[in-house]
Length: 294
Image (cartoon, rainbow, N blue to C red; front, side, top):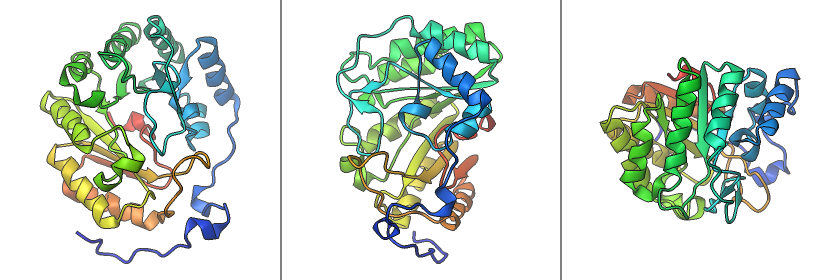
């Protein structure tokens, strides 16, 4: 299905000589609440995907008192072409981390918290045991806080996924990231069918499901629409669409900057397809406005 509107034509990224379009410019991190959140994270030896993935919305979210906690350390076993999180051999599992995350959530008095992690493919349980304990500890200390988890695919292992489902987070998010054709360069250790399996099984067991897709990696508008159809076929509730930004020169280059009008079009199409919520815009990320999705 091709778009029924005329796509805005922008110069290719290389012709912009390193400059981003105006709609992608954000202010540098700073502010009193930003400093407070950063200090708390360091004092409890916690990591955030906001920092590790160089999220452009970090100032807005941290000054609003929200952050996405990243468990299992700051080193991932996978080498995705888009991701700024470092790749390598992770440290040993930190069994005290669930307690520290729960205490941080409680001390911030969060109404909604988001928890994610690096991939721990070297572990038999994929890290799912610590995942479940983190959710449970957070529930115990902050029973009124809603919890969203952004989980790995666990290489399609349904037993590991089941530990997360059994902990009953309020929203279960697993990102699709890109279209199937681009999985090899973008997610070389991932598989599109693993993503669909995680989302399908989570929904079958009553989870409110969510996923995100990056644009600007070389996908076509028709491929975006096709992926949206496949996600609706497994009854995903919430979809986020945002612009891919190259974190370093060693990562995949930006193929194109997607115009806000195109993002608006996908939002309209997605709502017509039946998604309950579609966040679609250049600066949208998985956790952007997450508190509104419960």
